Image (cartoon, rainbow, N blue to C red):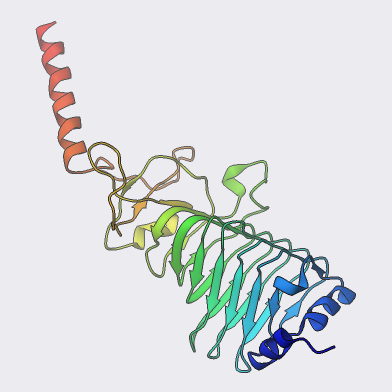
Length: 263
């Protein structure tokens, strides 16, 4: 029986419900073929779990390959169009939280290594390459970034040996390159040049905040964080803040000096 939505799927280049369900014959675990959209020509490795609401879309001029033993959570969008190329390794976790990986430009090429993890609204575009165990966490919009790989995934015992981590919210600096390292809660204001970030293994992107600590609406400025656990990590020569925070810190230092003199 030919269903009406099968006609709509075929018109847009997607597999029918029966064809989507037939992917399970190759070892792919499709939990709900009715809510899963897979374009023709997409290659999916065995033991990959596909949750409801996942879209894997490509056109005839592009390639989209998903490795083995991956987990695609609800709301995951994988797109390769207009000659783009998207390749995902093995044992990756995309989601939860509506992850988008889009190689939808003529020169776009996105390669994810093994054990890569993207979650909580991460978006990856452009010419990007994520090494073994690299992570992007949060509502981060990353375009043409290079994150180095490590010895294992996010659960590797030694944090310094894990893949690079990009986390927080907001747009990441374009053409960002980072090696492996450890995340940190400390942050500093982003600079126009990101050449020093080659040594910074883990970056934290966050929204600007006002004096009361509330996130400013419409703020597009990024903040970076670096690790204080490793000696070789890059250190700024100025305080990692400016404006009101810098004035408060300066006033606090002057007050401490006055108390020392009076004592």
